[in-house]
Picture (tube, helix red, strand yellow):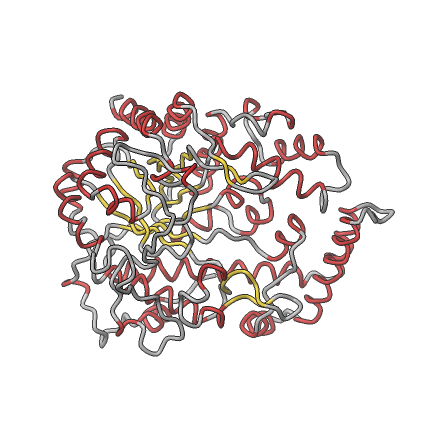
Length: 509
């Protein structure tokens, strides 16, 4: 979907009569010459919670990351609604400054100082820090700028959308912008087509990048569409709010026929879960419904378009402030590695049109159990009921064009890791899709905890040698950079060092 420049100038307030004058901003790009002088090597980023900088000390963390991991860019939260500050002690790492437990802490959910004038007239308002919050009065994004410049490093804002459970009670009026399911009940996340939600996101990034010297942003929404949720997880389809209904109606998509189609698919999935498989099997029965009610696919398409409109809006908003700001897209694991519907609906070629970089999650360690339990086992109870789990896995490898070395047998998935070839192949696929319009920064995940099937979270320590091989594989495959992921406070020092060893080796070529 193409959004006019006039629309974004209007909705984000970037008009000639507005309060912002781009030439006089303190924002991104002012340190570009210094950065380029000190960093002629590949982009090497790390994701971390802003609390870690203050827990361990900004200068100490920057020196540690530069020395151990060859890091030149930190990617840190401006907002922690997403829930990255509530992990059990068992998955946290001690980098030499002690283990900083999340127990009995009251960390802020907002790490930047927002200005009220940017949100005047908007429905949504950010949570404000209080005296009860740890680090009250600290301004981490302002404090880190000089230490970053001194070391020739950059900082990118890490911005995730908040789930309903994380936003309600923290973001004012958040419950009013959530999706609505087919039964008129509240959904789990915000509606991408809700203009109040869109305007709030645009105002948020505009405020940050006109108030702080920040070099870029990594935006992400870890969600897929209603059809994927229904077919692969058995969840009630959404969004049927008034905004989605109007958007689809304006495009000639009949809301009632779409609802009927989704309801029939929902009934089919429930029957399958109860082992009531139709005589024609699952896939043929499903195709019969979709062919009868093609409005289902149009509804799915228009839901995704809303998400892309937000990404486009962030890009246009920030480029109007300063063209040097780097805008990037975080593509989560389901989106990058196992949902064929999302792949088809939102290909990398489309993302590349409004992002300076794409960061696909290519977490080789954690993909193996996720693939078994979050994909194969789930769909085997639903859309994949026609097949055995081994048949589903073999079909998945073929459909997703996995490297032969990454075709791990089903019974080995839980206790092994994907090899470096998985990272290389997926990096190449992203590069091919981007076609030179956008850089690719591969997300190398290590020490990512595992959500046990029986409940609870357990550490999943990475193998340093595999971290090294996966990082080097991404760079040798053509990635313009790599991002140490998921979060610094989970990463063991020896694995950060393995990541850095690969980056140094590549840079020395």
